[in-house]
Length: 136
Image (tube, rainbow, N blue to C red; front, side, top):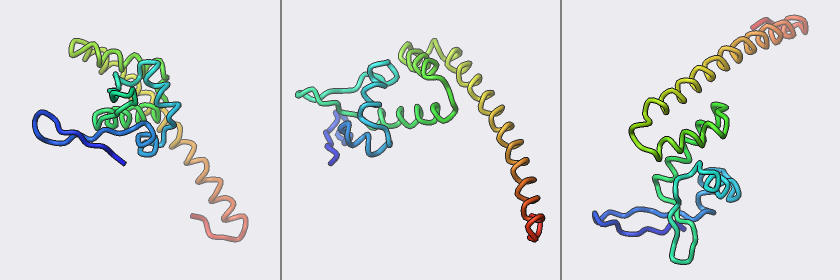
């Protein structure tokens, strides 16, 4: 169940427990706690009983971190990026550089995967022909 609280603007803002965030993101509670401990997550709000209360903004950040993970960016670089975000606007150039480096790495991996796919297609076509099928 997702709890909502009223904000000063009168709108509602959802707060999620760690188990809800785990279910929504596919990350384990252990991973979420680890992200917080290493500085990959910004400060997570706590209830009066000390229970973590994740916001929509936290969920958005976790979605972005998930994309960074898919790029293969090292955790240390992700933590550095998070630190730069917390330091403020004067770090925009360094953040952009980190993302541009990661983008170049992703493009190189895409090229490698396209080359690999071409080899697989040739092999599959060969087996289709060798087994009496029609080449694709």
